[in-house]
Length: 422
Length: 58
Image 1 (cartoon, one colour):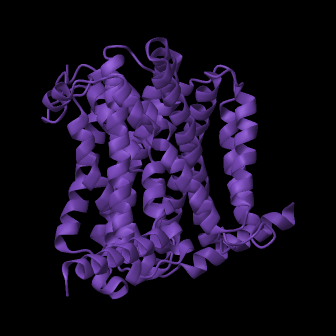
Image 2: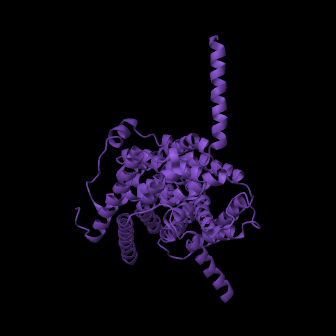
């Protein structure tokens, strides 16, 4: 075989692999990029403004953390063909099932509130009132889910994922010093030493990268999409790509605020956008557009995570491939979550910024409970067969659980005894 | 309304019946450990709520 024939063969093989990936792609990328939601953008913007580039190393560590947690849901969904809520009920009984479902319901609803906070505050920068954003978003999301196809929904979600990359050109436009980013950001360090505020920021950053709703969402999406055991390698690749993408976007946001707004007390991404617009008009505008997109993408996914979970347990039809007549309760649950969470932002004087930051921390505090169940389910060899966790995967999962519990405890101690860590 | 409520109760009962027997066996020690972890995490969330309320009030 000559060189050209070999090259042609390899190109064809790569093109086929890419075609196959594009069919499988979706749940991993969507869930990971959606995790860069409005609360996430606010957390990254505040982290950059508060600590400059100093916590970039920590964000990079979250790539494998997010990947190892989420890829377990791919295997579990593809092998059992069950959503996460149903897997917990079937695996551990109704008592533990209700615990998990109520956790999910509360955290999902609170996170959805933060998505609306982000979307309304982003569009307020362009003079659009909150009530109009609220109404338009509910209408838009309703139209997207009511089209009656998982495939269409997923492609629209992927389009919004692509818009999330708007932060990357923004970071280049503020001309950061690469040398300074490497020096300050890549060497592990704890800026300001151990203190309650640092714990809060570290936890909020973990909370924006992995959250309980993501476990439920990705597993249900894998089932709804109909991925099989043979698709697991591509599902894992999809999740890996999503993990890298989500952290890359996070790093670029930290670079923007760490370069331009370092030392400025940032309460919200919307405030960061407004302040950026004063010196870098387009960067601020990109930040606002990205914030709206992040909130919208988060809202699309989070509202579905609850509806899927309730549908699985209550035995309702619960697929995006069904229409409203076939799955009335699924869509009723979806719209109730969406409308009620969105209405919170219309309450005059509500502490919206504080809500956004605390929701991230509450979500990460409840995460270990969900992770323990996930690990136990992945060790059920009778059910999972060759796709059960290896000792290494268990060690990684266990370490993540322990680290989150330790960090939550340290933050809890700093709340109880404010002077404890200086 | 009472009919709806009784329907809902029946639904809950059917869920309990369907998932009465857990497929994954847990030893009493694991079950106790899980319950303690859950309670501990709820305590931490309560602490965060306390902090949130104190910040809002301040």
